[in-house]
Amino acid sequence: MPASRPRLLPWPGANGQPCYLVTDGGANSRLSRLADEMEEVQLNTGSDLLKHARELLRTRHVSARELRFLSHRLAEALHDALRVAESRGMRIPTADAGREDPAGPRSQ
Image 1 (cartoon, rainbow, N blue to C red):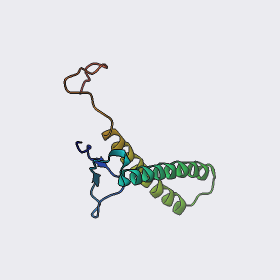
Image 2 (tube, helix red, strand yellow):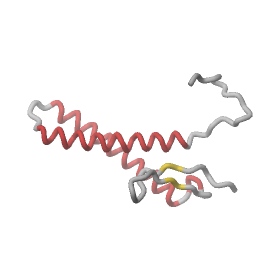
Image 3 (cartoon, rainbow, N blue to C red):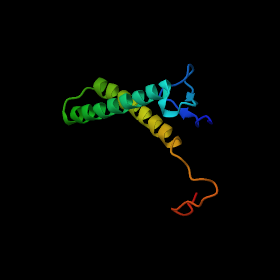
Image 4 (tube, rainbow, N blue to C red):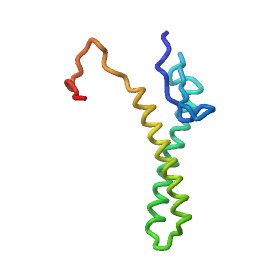
């Protein structure tokens, strides 16, 4: 059974570089399941943070410190969501090289 394509993990490597997983267990490996759980936590955290941000921004008296803190957390959540999107996009199966794309050619 061939190894799966590398999966971008939702956490960075030791020096902040992208961290990838290659496994013959596919989505059933322990690390794949852990990555799935981590992605779910990251997306839920981002969703909760967005709700909090909307509530906070409705109030008239928000300090610069609160806005700065909120901005940092929103940036972190956006970073996590983009990483999850990139990882999931990399796992979408591509059309076979010998078959035409039913959607037709795409412009670059």
